[in-house]
Amino acid sequence: MRFLKRWKTRILLFFAVVGPGFITANVDNDANGIYTYSAAGAQFGHTLLWTMIPVTLALIVIQEIAARMGAVTGKGLSDLIREEFGFRITFFMMIGILLINFGNVVGEFAGIAGSMELFGVERIYSVPVCAVIVWLIIVKGQYKGVEKVFLAASFFYVTYILAGVLAKPAWIEAIVATVKLPAKNALRRQDYLYMALGVVGTTIAPWMQFYLQSSIVEKGVTRRDYRASRIDVVAGCIFTDVVAWFIIVACAATLFAHGYRNISDAKDAAQALHPLAGDYAYILFALGLFNASLFAASILPLSTAYTVCEGLGFESGIGKKFGEAPVFYWLYTILIAAGAGVILTPNLPLIKISILSQVVNGIAIPFVLIFMLLLVNKKELMGKYVNSRTYNVIAWVTTLVMIALSVAYLWTLKAGTG
Image (cartoon, rainbow, N blue to C red; front, top):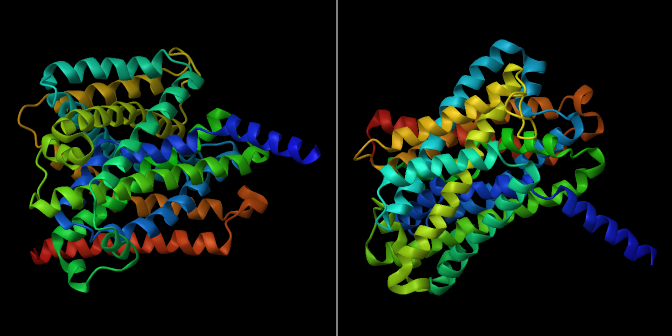
């Protein structure tokens, strides 16, 4: 009886803290993520699958660090950076995060526009309406209610797993490619490095660490809840990358295998779901893309508002009323309005914009990781919750690899290597 009671307590505790980790990881599979993974599979087949295992391990470690710092300190990441490194560094970092995240927000509205165009709805109608919906979800909603909506939306991604199975891919080839490094000449190609940066950047994005730590704090997760919160983080990271793996596999088995190497619009990407839905694949893709885009169009501006307001010392949190946190809500509003406004510009290459935003994420993530690692290893800040040696090795190796990939890509640009 005591054993059952202990497990019942643990299960109840888990459901009390579940949400931030799972939500943050699954926003990875937003419009930007779906387009990037789809393009990776269509353009390179299985040859980028090798990134999935190391990226998943790195994502688990990095997200766990962010959640642990939030639970232990009760403060958001930008708040800690300001306190420990000063206002000047924080100010310039917030400007950088604001610009990078704005690119991501534009990508989400590109997803909304692309998904609705598959139903014949022009972006001039769909984008403004969805911008208002996104604004109302956060400004007029309560955290617990909003969180439930986001959690439910996360499970829509199962459709991509089904699509990957029904596409009848070359399973052995896909599995071998997942555990085998690519040929050396691939890492000298500009287009391959660009897509590799995009795949990692859409999986481990700078905004995620700020949002997760802030949402852990707002949810009230403490040191006592930390173990259950860690399960939430790990489960979210594994689920999101399983979905990512299947998106790449589905596109490799359908688009790449049939010579469709370049995805120029949402209709091209929809063909990956043809084995699951036949001639109606575009409907299923459109629904999934719309769900992912609306989901992330709420989270990304929210993450940015949290990050900037915490870093600059303004009140923040959707638990507060508009009058209690005006800068937070106005920044959220401006990001949505500006992101939607950019997409209303005619003839924009929506998919190119989405993938570019993820490449920028990949180039920027080392800067965020360096600050996180300096903070989490401060004994006076974290006490016994400082990083283990294993965590430090994984996180620092991730940082150095991303710097190396970025330098290699920039070198190919300079050298003009195709």
